Length: 136
Image 1 (cartoon, rainbow, N blue to C red):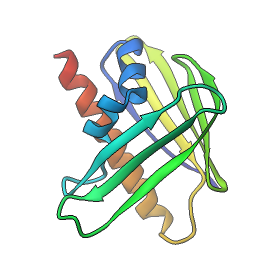
Image 2: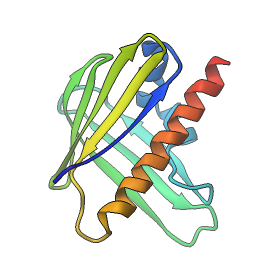
Image 3: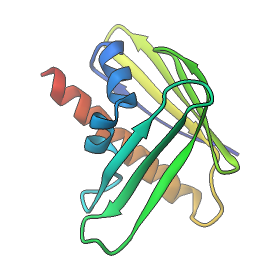
């Protein structure tokens, strides 16, 4: 079973793509709740390239690294990556009112599927708000 989350972003595809793949943007939107933040991010956007981000509780009580390797890049269309023994794909589908961003990923076994879906959806919702704030 895989988990899917998605959002529609009212912005041009190049702006959506850039915000999803640029470390300076990633640290602004990559959090599932207001009490967490991403303190650093690195992107080597090519097949075989690595990515990483450091997510931490704002109170300093905990944090973790999220890292992996890009397995397929199709500019403005698809980013596929592996992280540990899991995989994910990010699909970008331009439409008349912006871009649908859909993330499909393998769940892990420590947390309930619903919790994982809610967390990844919250991050994607933050992404949408970040990009749309830059266009307005």
